Image (tube, rainbow, N blue to C red; front, side):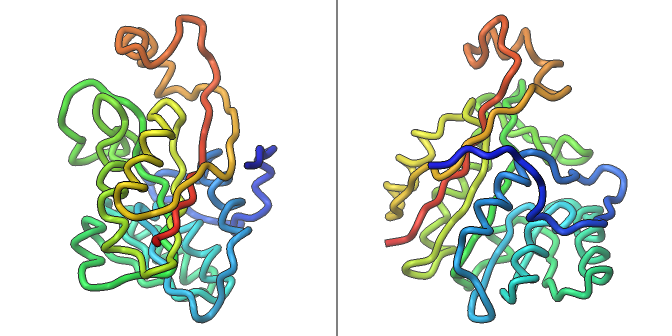
Length: 228
């Protein structure tokens, strides 16, 4: 397992982002550095769940992979398509739920930087930038769906790379992936300062037992799972 200084050197530069689209941050960089360690090329069929600006999809496409990128946000889809054109790299960018759009297809590599910030209320936002981070009271609403869907998304021997906050429970993610027939482990971590969303929810997070009173730093984890 590795820790990283988050240099950002593995991400494509000059990305644009339409209003409301999640821009590459520490979690994107950490996942990109994990992706850089994977053996991918022209024979690799890859899926990115929640593509945002398309940064990770473009990283994979730049190494020759055939990439399908999915997002529930129309502005994100438009952004990823624009960045694909600007970078002159082919991406198949689709709008909608990842399982609906990937139905009937399996991939060698699945990338996911899902919403994972714990949020009050049981429902998920249906619009606005919060769709990129709000993920229910324990932050696992989308993580758990990805874990359960791994066998349907991955070819035998295929790999899932997913980043999320340690606040959501890396052990639970690995247990769920194991139950879905995948060998999973944490391959990279990083510690980053709390951003404005977590700071705005400090009192609620403390009441939920998800954060200590003086907590100011968040651990990010990359989980690598391989379908058996």
